[in-house]
Length: 359
Image 1 (cartoon, rainbow, N blue to C red):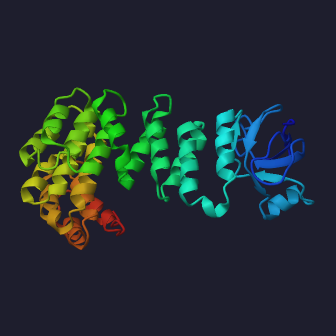
Image 2 (image 1 turned 180 degrees about the vertical axis):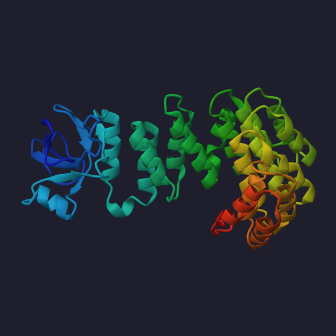
Image 3 (image 1 turned 90 degrees about the horizontal axis):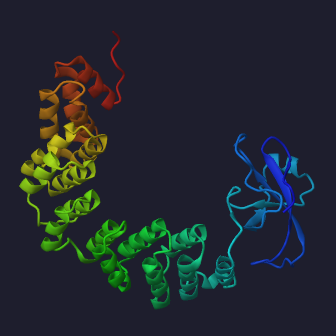
């Protein structure tokens, strides 16, 4: 690549000497002008003289600014608003991408396309692999594709974020072929164990009672969180309430609030209500959204707590009423006129979308 040159304040242009074309009819040795924008004036440019890049190109945008920059054309834009490139791509990534691009467009949505994308997930550099994984979300995945995904999931050299994405895809698409690998990850200590356990619960239903108890005894709060979230009927209202009261980790307490709210009923919602007053915002947010989502069922509890408390403590029950539907709005109207704390009355009016009274 030649040294990039400014076209204007943000526009940039450079020349590439083509080494290989993965798609299209360009020949090695051709020279191309590429254009992009650098919007961060203080940041170093994305390209430098001598860079070797794999770049996706598209026609220049048909906007007046770009027509002013290149009135005679003669340049191609870096795709993805300037983000469609890899710096110093490795040979494996290039060859895997070339195999995918060599497929006829109509075949990319079928078995061959799924297999090629799964191969990118298993063997390409992280950015390409992540994009390929996203592309698999809408395709049917046959044995060759799921075998490649299983290899990537088991490969400890692949990025954790990518392997977490595979677990999420397996859970979402109910990919039973990946279950043995998921079970191994769930049993092995490591950063992927919580994600693997969540995936198993999506595949098989609530975790077995023995595993729930085992996880609850763990010193790892992420494992305790999974146990609470995926316990099914193993944990009763009393045990979940105790977790909310006493677990030192906010994530576990938030999971307990969510599990109690999901049960519904007066006892469970009352047990979840300490989440409104937890010192950690993540727990209070969970209480607001999950208890409020119960709608009319949650309104008597939230209204009582709002009347019993003053600002700022009563703010969380008031916020829950704001997401509780028509019955919640009726309760807010009552608070806006009857609460003894003027700050709470104002908060209720704000939640109703009404202007504050003049003082």
